[in-house]
Image 1: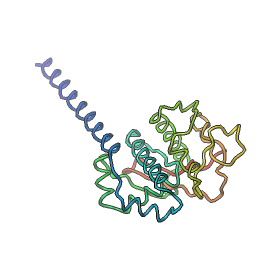
Image 2 (image 1 turned 30 degrees about the vertical axis):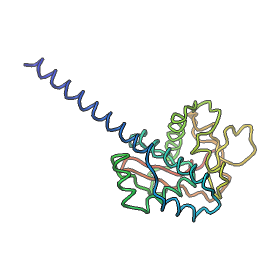
Image 3 (image 1 turned 180 degrees about the vertical axis):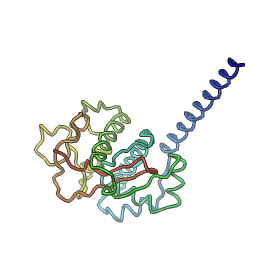
Image 4 (image 1 turned 135 degrees about the vertical axis):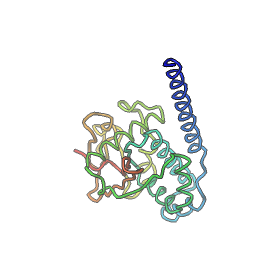
Length: 221
């Protein structure tokens, strides 16, 4: 009887495991194939009228990447490193029913967006940007410790010349431009460099009580 119960338990756990994996695969496919509503795109275009149609496509690819990162983070805090992608996310959230349905199907939970100052400690923002960097690099098959290029979501604001955007330099030792030092994010010392602005106001998002996202690094050395 003991062996029978053990085998039944193993079989049940295996079924649960494969069911979870299958659900995660469905969620990833849903995010990858999701078509953002035209109204959200129109609202972002009104807010950022300088963006071309091709550039808008790039921004929404960045938003898709962000949701893939959040999915892979499994409720752990991750960061939103692009201001213009954050703008797109804000517009998405305002379409409350569409956004809620997306979250339920893509993540199995509602992804909240709250001010960064509501986060318990500044160190959480640094942990978030490190995790976002690692996951974004993994998504694009980049070595996070020895990157040869920036992941799209980290390069976005610089590529599109976004006002008040978060600009990342691949190697700050070789660059005199202001910005966050992306090459330092993967190191254990945390985020390096300065933002080049004294008015950074990162936002954060959270799922329930345990997950959050913040725009930018929240400062540096």
